[in-house]
Length: 117
Ligand SMILES: [Zn+2]
Image (cartoon, rainbow, N blue to C red):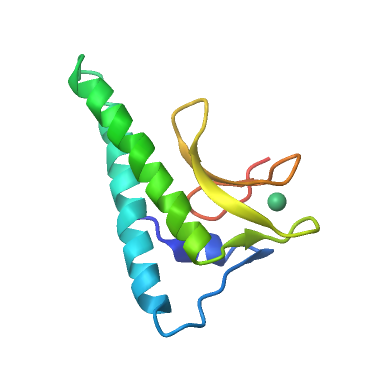
């Protein structure tokens, strides 16, 4: 299972996790990432037909938004360009979960924290 630490270990990614609640926030974010991962995998099951596939897709989008909100709550930001930019979780064109910053052009990472080309 992926954790927020994968992203935080990426170079030029910072976060504000110095508060007493930081460990709790990390735990909740990791759980949200796990739900998003499970839903992304479930959506790829070919045997699923409508309407379960639609419901899983909606749940996946909600889970991705939850992760993004938690990344924002932890002030996770990209420092690969100035000024720093927020980072969100996205589903890319191939259905894979990635992290993407708001820089233009955007920087992207896979869930292991490895930068994407
Ligand atoms: Zn960036």
